[in-house]
Length: 224
Image 1 (cartoon, rainbow, N blue to C red):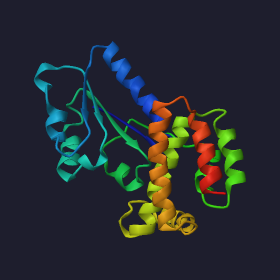
Image 2: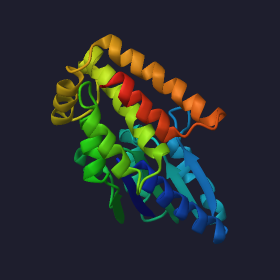
Image 3: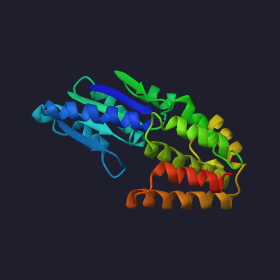
């Protein structure tokens, strides 16, 4: 068994890397299987088809599928299984989880550029001038769609931490930063922005208006 972990905040790069693994597996005529939700029995996916000695790539897209029994199974069968398992997570996996896994052959972490983090952390009312500069600097190298998806997630997290911070599954340092940023918004402002982003998403896909122009307009009208 070969175990590979792909994780990190740069979901664009991590997904592209995952697709490379899948493409290579298909080119080698391997069977590709995915486990992405709790309704699937991970143990059955891992040990299935072992009688046929078929080369397989198993992509696991929900780390929570690794309960104690599944971890025990992996450890006991690691030398017997002729499969490659990829654990793919859109975000950072904790060191505690990584240490709980059997032998890991490769870990690849995909980090967001510092400039993007600066932009996300600077997204609050009264900061429009800086946001314009950062947005246009970032989109010289990154797709506007990627930046939009990160902003949408940031707004979700800001609303979450403002309304129910005890349930957000992030490290304390991250929760603290989000609390500081969310304090610059009212709850109404956040819900309004989230609704606005839903409208932007539809408009950018159904009209000729460029996404970057819609983001500029939002910054100018909502965060000036």
